[in-house]
Length: 213
Image (cartoon, rainbow, N blue to C red):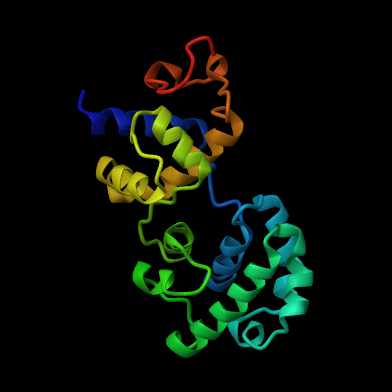
């Protein structure tokens, strides 16, 4: 069986286990998803969802956030970590969305990554979930599982993204990340995965995993 066929078989098996896998961030618009994803760096989705309730109440759109005081934004997002840099990026990003894109979140990777605080991971989250544009999100879970599955040998997110995009069809990219993240949180943990209770262990080469697990 070819590598692509093996990868797709494994992914489809995981999708049967996690049929409800989806983006865990709460949002009502592309703008809210962009903000929440920026905040999610080095922070749990649960914490971000707690913080954005008040943040979105105070600053529901780019117009208001662009003129917000840094101190107030910092106070609202402090518990997400790196709050000074995140607040600076959020305010600047809001201003850029207003001046460059007439207040609308752009729908291309190139335009998104040109915004302050937005890398490829954030851009792909927004593209895939807000605009249904295929994007392969590589977070810590996707990185870990992709290596264990033998889908990549790289440690660099950009290269992992390229490897996975070559391996899987575009229609699978967005959902693939959700599925891997859910499996990573539930079973294929770091540093030690729960292989003994994993339903797809027979399909997994377990690269870098001690066989005793």
